[in-house]
Image (cartoon, rainbow, N blue to C red; front, side):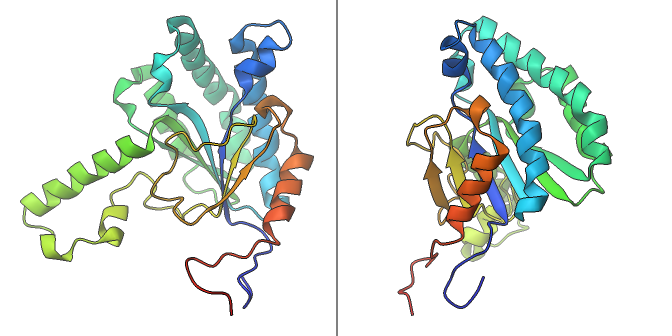
Length: 240
């Protein structure tokens, strides 16, 4: 960042990958066809990050609210996640991508959780791109879970309740090892944040684009990053 508050590129980009179902339906295909196409798009966007100066990428894969979808779609998504992890592990390890998962794992089946744990372990020494996958994640749920953990520490006498502030709570969030996102992108034309990284995105820039996620190319990603570079981030201050 220079003295004017301008940035050449966002360090951390978060993406709400929306529009898979509509993309499939527009082609006369079932919604899961769109989810498969969207999973393939993830690879291209991850691979684009180093050239664009993006060190951290967080993607919204499945929300705590997505369990409300039909049983067949949820089941298909869970199978897709497993297939994706099994097929992409070697590539992610060899390409220097560090993978983390955030969200509540309690509702996920043991096989999927084991694959997640394995991928986190196998990529733990990588540092080219830090890819975080939000799976069974909701911003309010995350804050609630963080508050419970913090409350236990206070009850055990390990934290003075009078010392608790915003930074204290942030240490108990799923993302405690990550910088806050600089830019949040949502595809598909919807202009809402859908309970995604509520705490972390307090000062993030937002970009809502009409493109459906399976059509979101490396070139369009680069264009959004370029647009970010001319924004002035004030963090509540008056420009000098």
